[in-house]
Every structure is written in structure tokens, then in C-alpha cells.
Length: 305
Image (tube, rainbow, N blue to C red):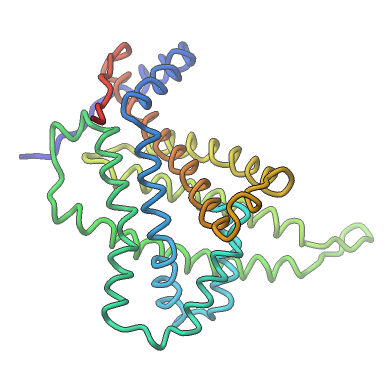
């Protein structure tokens, strides 16, 4: 059977959203609630927490043959702040402790880490199948393809970390330089910091686009993937800065949870990030419905019992 594509008229979809932004937002939120979006986000966050350390260990061990381990860990600590605000140092500390004893890494442990590092992507595929149910009922993805997607993503993230590490090192070198203009010496440190932030945001949008292009069944246009990625990135950037401020000033979570603080905070951050990710997917799904003229679709809630 040929792969089914979702047809839509970009101009009509954009016109409807621009003319009725409130109705579109309400339609998206209702569909997200009907799809048990928060429940799906919780599942994705839980399995991401299980996958995070094994995934990072595998990537760092592989890339340490090309780049110094210290440089890799520095890059991870910097950009993990995008994923787990305020807790990247604790995560990298645990990662470093394991890497110091990586000589005892056997085949059984290696295979176990490969399995656990793929769990989050497998669960994310299932969550996307719920949100894009109108695609899933038309065509199902072959089970071998679904099984291979998580491991391909691990390779993709490893390659991305390699590129980001090299670019970050180059920008840090630039930040140590200065230029002489109009009789004054201007440091390039501020420019380097701004470029590093732009690099992080651009990488975030690129990863989100890749998720929306690969995870759902069927073909998705780059335009729709970009719309969903921008939505998720804006939501997460706002939330991330709020979380950084909250954990730095008001949070008393360490008093309540004690030694479990890092795990609780990381899980909480991952759940909010997963919610933004799935909301971006829901925006794409509803945008497709609008393109097909389904502007008042009554989505039946998914029953959990």
C-alpha cells in the first residue's frame, strides 16, 4: 500500500489561524486534553529520566575517541541546562563518576544501557501515534522501522553533540579575543556568549523539527514541522527561564525531598519539557485538520479505565 499523505492548503490553514487565533488555541487545548496529553507527557518524562544517563554515557564513550572527555562534559553541562535547568552539574557529576570506572563496562551492561537509552524514543513514538491518530488509522509503520528509529536517533544525537562541541570550542576561542575599534579595545566575550545562546536555541528548534518529521507516521512538511518546533521552543524557553529563577530563589524542594531532590527536579523539568513537545505536536495535528476543513472536530476523550 502506498504511503498516505495528509493534504492541506497552507494558505487556507494560515488564514484561518490568523483570523481565529483564539478558536485555534482553544481547539488545540481541547484536543490535547482529550488525548490525555498530560498523562502522555508524564510517561515520556519518566522514560526519559530512565534513558538520560545511559544515553549520555554511550554518547560520551563513543565521542571520547574523537574529542577530549573534559571538553565533551563541559559542552554537556552547558547544554543540559536547556533540558534540566539548574541540575546539569549534578547530572554531569554522576556521568563523570561512571566514566571513571568505564573499564569494568561489560557486554551485558553495554547492551542494557543501549536498551534503556532507547526507551524514551519508543514511548515518544507511541505518544505521537495518539496525537496523530488520524494518520495512524490510515497507515501503520512497519514494526522494524519503529524498532530502529530510537537507535538511529541515538546516532543522530551523538553526531549533533560532536558538531556542537566543535562549534562551542571555536566560539569560546573567539570570546577570549578582543578588537581595537575607534581607539578602544572591545572584548568579544559578550558576542561569544550571545552566539552560544543562539546556537543552543537553533539546535533546540532543529531537534524538535526532526522529532516532528520522524516520529509521527506519514509524511510531514517542513513548514508544519517548523510551526510545531517554534511553538514548543517558545513555550519551553519561557518555562525554562521561570524554572531557573524559581529554583534559584523560592524553591524549598531540597528541604522536602532531601537526597531525592535531583531526581525529583529533573523529572519535573522533563515533564514540563515533554508537555511543550507534545503541545507542539498537537498544534501540527490541529493545523492539518484545519487544512482539511475540520475546524469544529469533536475529539472523543481517550478513556483510561
